Length: 133
Image (cartoon, rainbow, N blue to C red; front, side, top):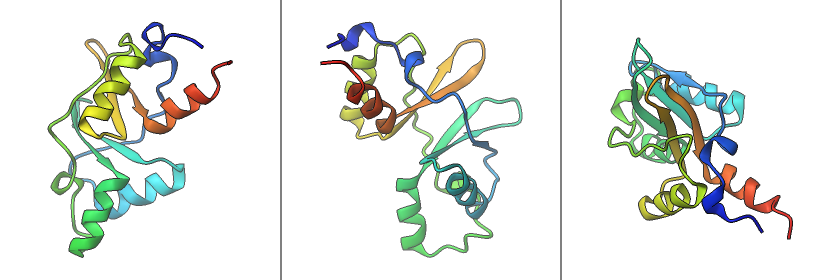
């Protein structure tokens, strides 16, 4: 089995990002997530700076509060107290951070390009399930 300290986030993260602006409507974000079969949307401002993340977990709160989905911007529900990973971080470290914070999705950023990917518990599971025994 590979040592997860020797596996890097860049090897398992999803690079195909679905991004929206903070003023995008919740209903539109949800539709985009469903169409893509994904569990999170990255929220960026006009210059591509990471501002937040909205996940399928957030939609439980949205539905419970019965806000008008066609009028509510994602900025009202997105998480903004973000912990991010770097593409060169070890998978073991990122997995530990995700467990500690109970995250299912973590944006991946680098200093030059901004948001370059997202790593999810699904990505981690897929990687571990394909490790030769």
